Image (cartoon, rainbow, N blue to C red; front, side, top):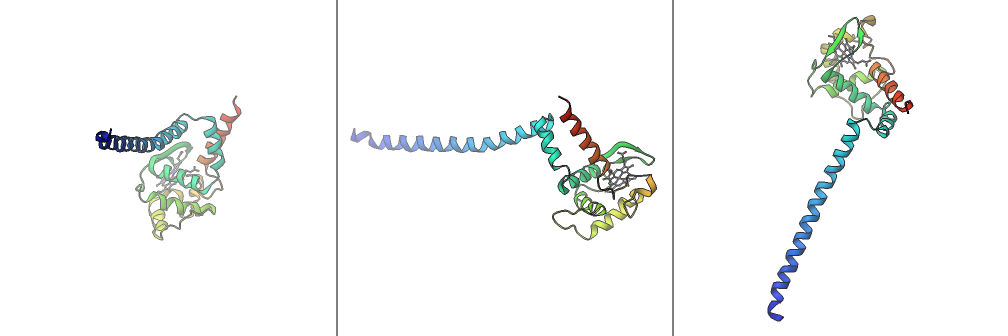
Amino acid sequence: MQKNLPYLAIAIVLLYALYNAKFHSVQKILPKININYSKHIKEHGHVSHTQEELARIQTPQYLKNYIIGVINHGSNQFNFPGGEMEGGFASAKDAPKIACYVMTFSGKKCKKSYPNDAAMFYSSICAGCHGDDGKGLNGSYPDLTQKKLLGIQKRENFLKSILKTP
Ligand code: HEC
């Protein structure tokens, strides 16, 4: 028995190491599964996700993401005399600060203050259509000073209609 003691000790240490390694790999995998799960809910419009989105549709963060989305991907859903807006007028890097500047038109603010050049970016890239004051050149383009932008209003109506249908 005494002769086998070192082997026993080694076996215990090995088992412990194995258990530890396993435990850590499980820990590593678990958050991944969680992220995929919430992504799944998002993609498939689960009802609870609809409620969750409605709850934050009025927040500045939601508005900021909406404007960034329009800058990056464009918008073609409202039939303005000016036609559609293509994506990519500004780079994805500049989009967030321009979005924060646009939000000031309707009296809203981003958490972090935007750099001073955001206004310059807006007036050189966006104002040709939306106007320096954001009002959309007398109805030719969307008025960005509205309390609720058209896209937000439309999304809100859509989410509410999902909740109504049984
Ligand atoms: C060539 C003209 C043009 C330029 C330049 C332009 N837009 Fe637009 N924008 C439009 C049009 C047209 C629409 C409406 C498109 C539609 O029917 O969905 C629009 C829609 C939008 C909307 C959605 C409005 C709403 O009520 O939901 C936002 C926000 C917006 N633009 C911001 C910007 C910003 C910021 C820039 C500069 C980076 C910019 N636009 C540059 C023409 C333009």
